[in-house]
Image (tube, rainbow, N blue to C red; front, top):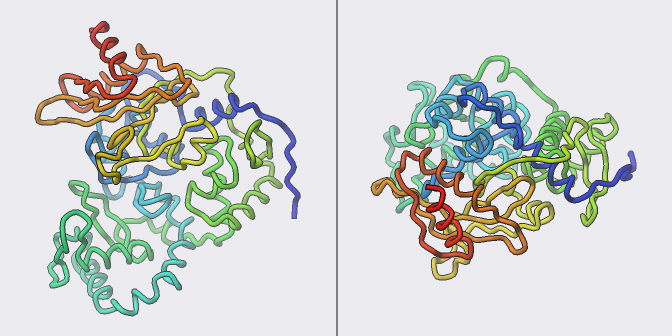
Length: 400
């Protein structure tokens, strides 16, 4: 076993620049955002996490907006949520869109779900599971709402899933069912052979090799990261992650480094850019890889972030759906946005400055205008809540 020793020291500022650059910031070319550029962004990130909340916009649309600027969401729908376009869904970080090439690398997770984790459920629900598999085999890809079954009755609003929906989700995790895109954000389920290329279905990757490839992809996407960061990216066990890290260090893919102020050793990807300066301005989804692992966000940016969707309104500190504000290599604030589609208004429900951060409002206002236009809205309205709101509103008025 190779003993990992730090061979270099990296300043916190350089670590931030490496991390932000690895995530695709600072390289925004001009011109229209094409399907090719969207595909490249997904490949760079490794996945787009899905979430159903659309108070401003659903989460998977936001990472491309942050990195590429305004684009046609129909292009992403066609690329990521349509069958046969090179992407599929699986439990990668959480539920996420992934390149089809990643699907075989997660077979070990599917096998785990087929094993002890879900064996009891499957034994108790075998007739329903087989009935659903037979129906997909006979009729092809289906939404749950298209399946006629006595058990297909919701048990309440929102998360009150029917037994059919629950069964489909179990089969999805087990890899016996996959996705053929979505319709109105409703997942379309399919048997793997109905939508995945033969070369993907036939590819058998040993679990250790698959995990090493996943850790390498996480390291490439992060640029610089601790073992816990790398484990979280594809939600892997720490012991598996450390085994992969040792092999990648031995192969020269990862370089152990010490980051001033970080308690744990970090690993720098050999191909990571080390920019002296980075210029970026973006509103981030709560589920953007830059911030989705909250411990990393605190360590890297000194940014304490908790989404407050599930917090009662009277207990919320910053707002329902706050978007972190990235300026260059710093997270300088957070803004709670809501799209009032009927009133054609982007509502800035609150805006907050991070303690000690320089929040350049003249760079943030254009992000709000961009978001407004991208949403097909006509105006921005400020509520006045938050210590950055009045300054943003004044800057917005001055720039108009």
